[in-house]
Picture: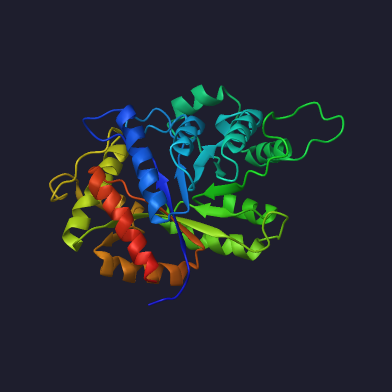
Length: 332
């Protein structure tokens, strides 16, 4: 058993359970945020996705305000804001407002993907670009958060002078390289891109330049986790996420389906391979099994933090999975 110290955080996509709607999904997220705050989770991040009937966190900053208002200590953040969908000034003002209302509790995680399909991305960006100018947009955003300079005409109010922590998110080596260059913390989307994980970590650590923000590299790894009283139950819980991803690759994304006992009647062999390959980094099992999986993961990656996504249909079992995950981690 490893003795590595690790912080746990929550990645919540605000999933809309089948038979429910966005209001219930957002209320579920607040209940989960309060629950994980009591358990000792460090952060609770929500992600920006658009035109998806199964995800209720499109207005990410608004959702963050709702969650921050309903909790006391846990850090609330974006995992992430897709910066090319927005003007940097808007994000500086939104997160400046959140930081002003909830000082010391707000994280700004940034990505460059659209977080949606091409048609919706076009509607969001109105021809502003494909995200290739992300480094320039990030530089503009960071200047808006800096202390105002004499004669500076464009200011984020609120926002200017506030030290909102910025994280770069990625599923490849692009953001890893940029985070290293700027001396920013890096969060990798291992929950859906396990193949690029080690390359991204290697790039980030080898090219890291210390900054006023960060003296040493700091990596947070996104991972899916399903922890239950038995291995069999955990595997059943994971089928909701598997079905949701299967529907996505079939071009029919929708609400989070209930768990099923057996996936074999639902997917074709090539679909099974695609889903399981994409979700290959998932921790699944009882506490003893997940403890071993987690120890091996930390030894292989050296991650400083884990941010856990548990897309479980049953909200009581979802909370229980996060509770068991914390129990596992506390024993490491």
